[in-house]
Length: 478
Image (cartoon, rainbow, N blue to C red; front, top):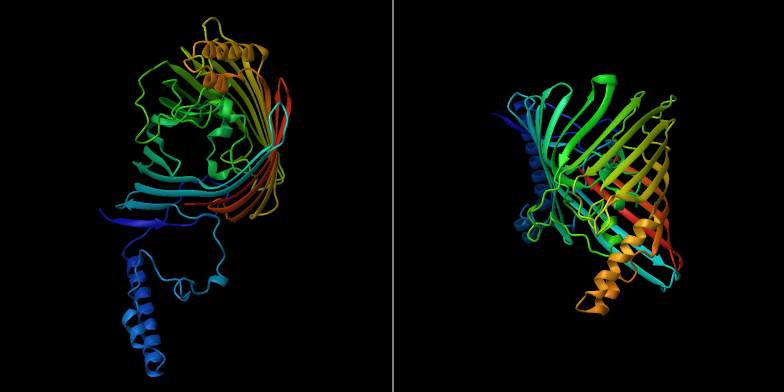
């Protein structure tokens, strides 16, 4: 078995970060690499000898040459960190993928890394009975490490992904997929439930620093389960259906209903302090989409810029057979449209959801939401996008949350602490956000900078409260 490390750059910017790009490597490429390294050593030796003859190289420099620690290299000289001919080389459209190719087959094991360094400034203006407040944070928003594999011409695939930020060391994905028939792939493990295309994207290809606020309420979240997915076949549709545990595996998306009832979302996937799934209330989820024209649905951005309108229409659902009233929505529906033409893109999604009252009974109509995004790709580097999203809580849901809060306060051992946690239950009516973002794609989505400015608006029974958020994010991934 021969193993060779691959690290190629794709010429297709529109591909998702984990799209397949392969390159052959044999003994010839290894010999060529050794030759280049030998020539570099000769050149370096010649420079040192010339400096010694001129008397400009001290004995200390001769002793230390080439002995700097690889783990903490010196930065006093930039000679070795400046690639030759860097000014003449065109930047690729992506970095990687980095893979170990196994033997003479197309099987591979891949390694991935992604990080986002983010500065976030938030200013909350006085209103709705609350005072002025502000905050500034500088953090690594994400640090993702991935290990993936592909065997038997891609018929058996797997992915393992963790988040290693200081604030959240957690499991993200762990799944195994098997394709037996052309239009049917089975996947089992922990991954995003198939609910809408927008959340099925990678975070790395977003036109903004993060997801719209509507995903906080409506998902799609990650759960443990099994699904069948495919594209093509009957009417050339793409579809995915699955059955899941009904337990949200993380505390990032589809946790809005928990916050409506005044509770704090838990993170079962936290490594070291998470919990083994101890309950199972079957949840069914699925989505169906129809694409018209040659459209890339892996990202909203229209890189190709065809003159013809290309669009995708999809619907999704998620139904929980026995939801925990204060943790899970009983039923969610989504309808989505994505259109692209001449480097413009438009994405519109509507969400409807039903909840089960905390004291039991028939499900009732709960939150609803709308997200609209429009963007324009000026060229391979520059992109501009605008987005509006709003989540509305119906009177029935607010009344149920208020009743739950009053019960918790009345039966608390510390009424003051309970009042602080549940006192505002049922008071919020809407949460809206209007955002604009400009992106510099230095190397596609592998190295890019996003500047986002957002106006946040919350409607409470006591009035309006507005806020301003400014986010600057640098992303690097391969």
